[in-house]
Length: 90
Image (cartoon, rainbow, N blue to C red; front, side, top):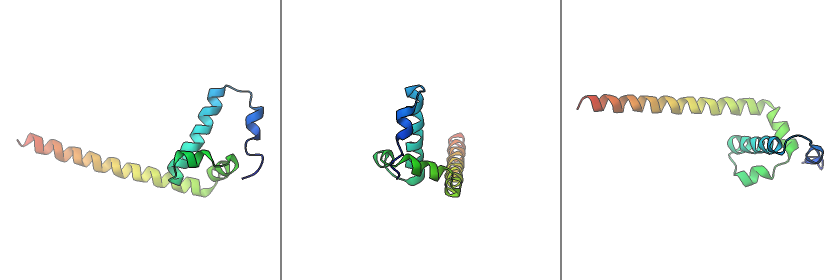
């Protein structure tokens, strides 16, 4: 983590809510992608988050998370079908 990680925050002139949303977005990305707690993610330097978002690892992990989500959705939809079929047979 470099010493300049938080220097852009002191010169930021936009809406405070926009900055907070951007920082929380980065933190939740690290929570989801890094399987870490929110307090751990909030302690990470902005330079690391930027480096991670620009790396091939980010794209790979994003695709893996999307694949897992689609798989879970498929299982739930099949279970819904089984439940509906079992209820109509009664």
